[in-house]
Image (tube, rainbow, N blue to C red; front, side, top):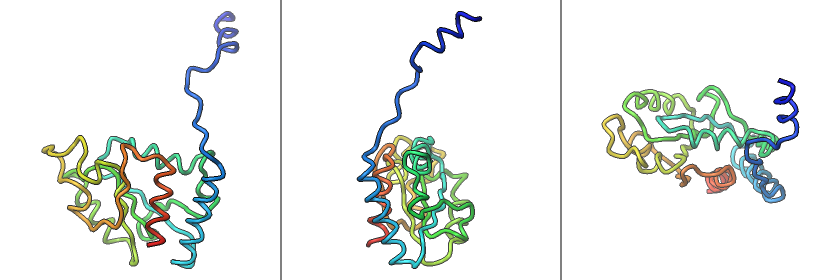
Length: 169
């Protein structure tokens, strides 16, 4: 037991090192998004994320926005638990038959003005799930979409750039 303990202390971790985003570019993107949302809405941007049937790759990247590396809350952006408090619906994955009604209800519960952002290739065209018996199709086939952020999955910087483009449009 003691041998394994010392080996564990002396070896490097088995995980990969965290990517180091360009902190200056991240700060500029975040500040730009905060300014644009305050100019457009008069307050910070509230985001509700909806998984309509994805593989969770996009969720991992979206959750990275809130970790210690990206920390979007320092720019006034926040994820909310209820669609009634949201300005933006961030929808991932192809829409499955089981999630269609839930997505429509979430869309209807979000107050106007609202924006819908389809995140990832699956939300755009079904991705690898296109044509599946369990899927209705892309997000745009169920609710109106204002912006698509492509990628499988899109990285957090691409998500921030997409949100800036949405608010500044």
